[in-house]
Image (cartoon, rainbow, N blue to C red; front, side, top):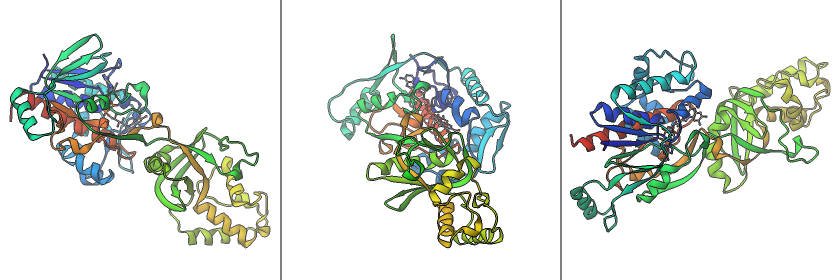
Length: 443
Ligand SMILES: Cc1cc2nc3c(=O)[nH]c(=O)nc-3n(C[C@H](O)[C@H](O)[C@H](O)COP(=O)(O)OP(=O)(O)OC[C@H]3O[C@@H](n4cnc5c(N)ncnc54)[C@H](O)[C@@H]3O)c2cc1C
């Protein structure tokens, strides 16, 4: 019988299994798919944004305050510098982009997974692939498990957890780490199984929704003169360094600066992903619209001054030739449709009202309203096991002795930038450490 069973061979599960084994525990790692680290392999477009550079307090500031508070102890136990050290010690060369995102130099996530696998092997972790866990067995003792008296009875009796049901077998074990991830990209193995088990063991699972996901958008009528529902913008076109804003009832509710990609159904890229979580949270209340600031580093007044200057000094040029920051040629017809100006108009025929509309579009080009944010296409999901029911110092369940929770199964969703792998690595590390200590009866 293993001392610790870890369910899920992603970032959190691998770190949990490795850390538990380094402390002397017999560890069994169960993974549903035929390989470890599937999401690491697809992370960062296959390049793997391992973590984020900088002081750990700065890294934490990028999370929502309650999530930052929860992962703070774990991130101090396994900070960004430490996960980088673990990888570079084994020969991985990394570089930091100007925006703080850390990647392998040779741009492949495969090397990251190979190194983590090597760590598991050296530590003696038994890895079982194609091992789908069906549930976690626990002994049933009467009374609410959160009551003190009940906890004392359980403590005297031993752990509540009895083992895990795997397809075709039962693995007896008193200490189980759930690292089964979220439910985005279900083909990668993550189908929300961990939440079903956590709920069955008495945990609250906060409502799950998309985060870091593309936006499906219904374009404004001005871009669809035929009234068709199709998103008309050319897919594959990207805007560099713009600000995407979400508005509700005219009020800005979210913004993200970076690159924006037009897709077949709407918007993707860092900007769209960056605002998606808030957009989903707001959509149930009322319509959320999206607009782009094409000149985010210049004030409205400066853009207005520049535009007027250019128009005044180029009376015979067509307005379509106006310098427009990030806008590629294929988007110009849509931009001018929004500004209600014929792109072939010569500058001398552009009125003051036209100029005002142009500047308004440069600083807030309205594209349409968000129709849907597909959870399955998100890099992570928001929601999951309630943070109040897990001890942030140890990742022990406060509800069910012998159970440890980590990674995306928890109600944590960081922004784009290596934050989510950092949270998964750190919480996994602490969960494995605690499970091993509890199992081996050490301090
Ligand atoms: C396309 C994409 C790109 C991303 N890019 C980045 C990035 O560059 N940087 C970053 O920080 N984050 C990125 N993320 C997010 C990051 O990958 C996740 O936050 C992180 O992998 C979560 O780790 P985890 O171990 O909690 O879960 P996962 O990595 O999802 O691992 C969970 C594992 O549990 C297994 N499992 C599930 N159910 C069972 C079961 N019943 N029995 C046995 N095993 C089971 C699954 O097969 C899976 O292997 C990206 C995500 C996606 C989808």
